[in-house]
Length: 196
Image 1 (cartoon, helix red, strand yellow):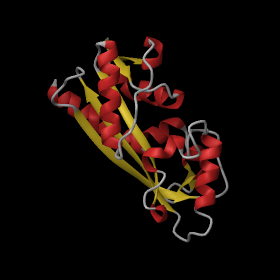
Image 2 (cartoon, one colour):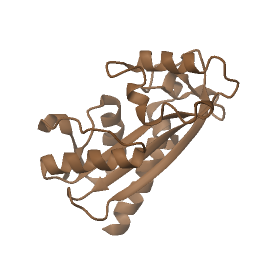
Image 3 (tube, one colour):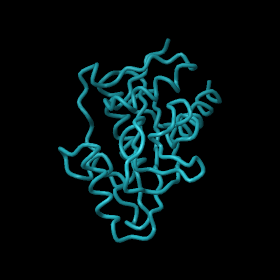
Image 4 (tube, helix red, strand yellow):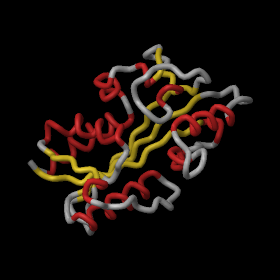
């Protein structure tokens, strides 16, 4: 098995990546297990932040790295919270406080459309001049009432009209088939296979 450092300590993301990458024979090691602190994320775009995280994890570990930067963009809020999704309610915020702030910001908006974004970056080394970069979107609507126990982040408030449920009501396997992260990983896997 090839070792791959994952530039995240988010338990939900780690679980999703392990499940989705299992067929490729990668041993996913969260950066925290190697004592690697989180990278700075000063950039305005998902892609730039994901690339910074991947280079940071690879440089510290000497291993190939996979990083994602993802978040939710509300259409009536000009794409906010965007890259600030995990810290929308402040640095010490959690999923509940982030969701509460988003619902509050949308209370007077008629357009509740939103989409999740996932930017994935895979690099073979910290100085890899040809990173594999994938960015995907998953569309839905923000609802005030949380529903479902699966997922994390904004999933309980992210309603999928075509599924008639929130992302948090989907079974994990079903979510992996249609989510922004699932789409991005499938595209990344196809590119990894084409380079092999």
